[in-house]
Length: 154
Image (cartoon, rainbow, N blue to C red; front, side, top):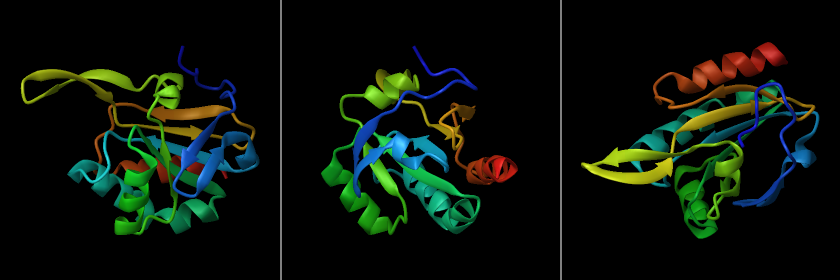
């Protein structure tokens, strides 16, 4: 059962590249969670770099950005360090967050059906309510759309 728009997101804690990330600890700030398929792949690297490039603007809008994938913490730490991301990457190997936000989908990869993360972004307001979602995200210009929405909340 995915979180519905304008409803409270259940509190969660996930291991991240900067220690545990707990949603309730972010109260009062807008939280941008972006789900991506895999560390160190072209689209995911571009998307992360786009969020990193806009990070100061998100901070000015009182927002915290965090990336989420099923990769291990070790993989996340390497990816974050290599790309110099100024935000945390949350590790979700048991797919608890993926299930909460309903981002697991069947995808075609080189003619084979595989279950994977659908690139998606969610904005949670300072009171913990889901305010906006983008599913099946195409990377170009996506961060600009997210930033504009977050700035409209500030």
